[in-house]
Image 1 (cartoon, rainbow, N blue to C red):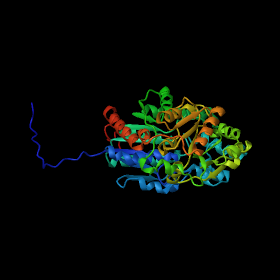
Image 2: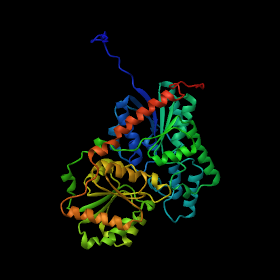
Image 3: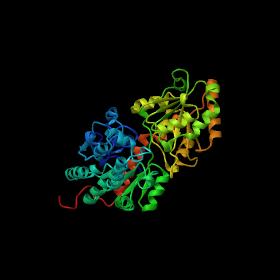
Image 4: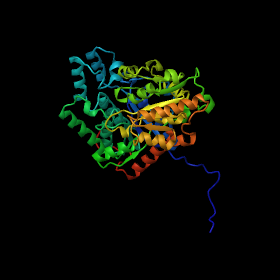
Length: 468
């Protein structure tokens, strides 16, 4: 039976107001580096799926950023309100104690130099045992205060926090408890399961407090998100929190992808194997140096070059020079994100080096997805059964080689060079295969998850229960 449509064609259509999200993130433009990309791209694409974020972040002059990339601010939609607050920054004090520039101590992190004097050891002990869960904890009280003001003044449907720094999650815990609002906690890296955790100079009481904070966050959150399956299993061993995997990704608008022929033409007619990002001791691609040395590139691969873009520890370069291939390596400093993307696209092959640490199977660096999107073939060194290996295999972007599989790595590299010298090159991921990892797709998943936690959560949309 057909029922006539009695709606007036000229009747105004009432627009559905967007959901409101209070998004708490320490890293936001003008911060650069990989830590800012996830927050920035969620902010950019969530409005397309019915969610309007308000960003709660730190004032740049009071922040501890290892890199700056002011151009990223152009990607923030004009409709997004960005609330910035003061933060007490222990890195400034830490730098004075070590008699270094603040930027240097932020970049070094916990582990830094192998040989430390008493002043350095004392300063690092203080960082590991006093500033819990991390050195950005000085932002928490100021962010909580501003968050309370926002939640009293405006109606929000949910709160989201992303870490590291994991002190950001303490802000979410305070706001969710006071205002009884659904809260999604997002982990870009593990907390107490991070690979270098056992190496930190922490006392037993400090570790106990840190672990207690992590469990508090996981128990109070409505739901959680992580970037890999291994991380999900780690967190769910600690507490039965509903956790979904929303991987990192790439933004198609960052990739004005040239044709395969254009991308093949590397300036100078060289075969370039490029690594984009930091290379520290744990990420040192020792098998690559050994494999390249065995190939005798000076005689058999004369146009072969390796390009390392970003911060490279001296010990990594020393290892390469020990095999007599230091003259085959070109160094470039940290590049703004747009320039780094161009370098990926114009390289012959890309190197992915996974940290050789406990839990390496779950390490998925943010640049992996941009490697996939570049269309260039990828050589990976790391766990062949890990999450990163799965992404390379599923996308057809490249192949992962075990940390010690020098022979297979060398054979693959030699074959690639010979094909290039003959006028062809093994392909990376196709555009269709890469699109499943687009930032827009990940924002769609996040919007759907936020809707679910509102429907299933206990929050009442931002009505506070305690007196102001």
